[in-house]
Image (cartoon, rainbow, N blue to C red; front, side, top):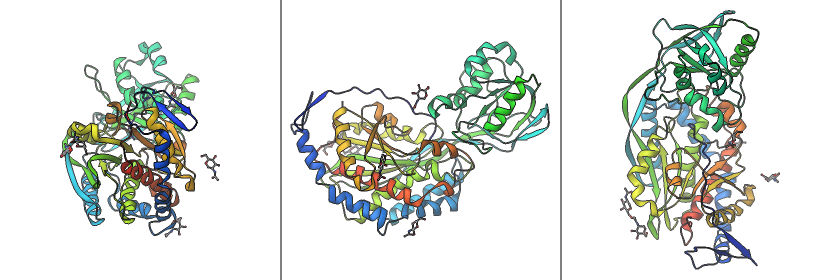
Length: 472
Ligand SMILES: *[C@@H]1O[C@H](CO)[C@@H](O)[C@H](O)[C@H]1NC(C)=O
Ligand SMILES: *[C@@H]1O[C@H](CO)[C@@H](O)[C@H](O)[C@H]1NC(C)=O
Ligand SMILES: *[C@@H]1O[C@H](CO)[C@@H](O)[C@H](O)[C@H]1NC(C)=O
Ligand SMILES: *[C@@H]1O[C@H](CO)[C@@H](O)[C@H](O)[C@H]1NC(C)=O
Ligand SMILES: *[C@@H]1O[C@H](CO)[C@@H](O)[C@H](O)[C@H]1NC(C)=O
């Protein structure tokens, strides 16, 4: 996942419960909630069959094994790279060989940035070679590097207060980790804010919930009219040490060298496959994850897991010989990490049919043992999702939280389409996120089985119900 975990303020629909029946305002459906509840309860056996196949049956560990083969073979898949295009071609064949329908690629132009050789060495108060990762879209330094004194701050407010001290320096942000959406602002805007006060470069403390001296990269954004300066992340350990040194009055000097370069946009694709709906083929439930990753680690967790449980959802449904009334569409996004480039392109192309999208789903915050589903939609749709999640009682994943989201599906959610995402252990997720540690080693086949079962049950039932999810 890139950087958005925005708070979506939906219109809350009021309804009152009256002896098991709900009366919704502006209700387009004449069916009572009790009838909808009964309709959903009839999926109990189908849900059990999906769970049995995914968790205990012959599909056990399949999403994990498939993912391991892909990421061990092609490695990380950064936007614009040959390995991303190789992964897309492999997935295109995989989905066809799996017997899915309407398998095709939808072209997208995507950014191409490469980090090149990079290093940072503290020269004063002692020589110390630092682990760094340049931030996506950063420019490089001159070949001889940038050698400058450090100004360390813990917030943008402190940078403003100490603006006169920043000129000609390397600004180091030692911002505490609060949560991802809050803290990631330092990664995204750190260089721009430092450049505005005359800094030569900026280094951020990695946005991570935990560290064993691991730098965690990610996208950053320049602003028109503000000079572009090189920017990279350093480890939590080094950021804290630099802070301690500064508070002792030490003069700190760092030499930063970055060979980062932006190249012309590259050709890429969103990868699409379907199980075509039996009764309302024009109507869609979309399940998704992104195939691109950062250029470190294997992109196993971010977002190989999300992409592969989404594929697995369709595989499980197909293997059981099920065909929902609506079309189940799998999309493996490209260039999510660069700001949802593939997701935006898909939205632009397909939004003409927005009225026929019942639900958009994206898993991009880990596929560890899920604690439930995050959902954005009307209160009536939420009540329906809560009933659907009851079908997952056998794996004890029944909770429905607020704020379903995902970089690639937010375009639809903001336009009023109900959206869902998977919830799991975010502390673990942000321990490995965008680092060399994002490999198969953090993935667990049993947890992926459960995640895939949740994904398949929700997408199948919503795609097969008599009516689309009601909107606000
Ligand atoms: C699935 O993975 C688990 C955990 O590694 C292992 O115990 C189990 O034997 C595997 N099942 C199959 C069918 O490979
Ligand atoms: C993150 O932390 C900020 C500041 O404490 C808070 O306002 C925000 O709601 C938090 N966001 C999430 C997604 O928890
Ligand atoms: C939406 O689906 C319905 C029924 O499947 C179809 O009649 C209608 O033309 C579709 N609308 C759009 C905008 O494609
Ligand atoms: C929109 O939906 C119609 C069917 O309702 C389909 O024929 C058409 O290809 C869809 N257009 C896009 C761009 O997805
Ligand atoms: C089921 O999940 C809930 C909440 O996620 C948890 O508190 C409870 O311990 C779980 N029960 C079992 C039997 O695992």
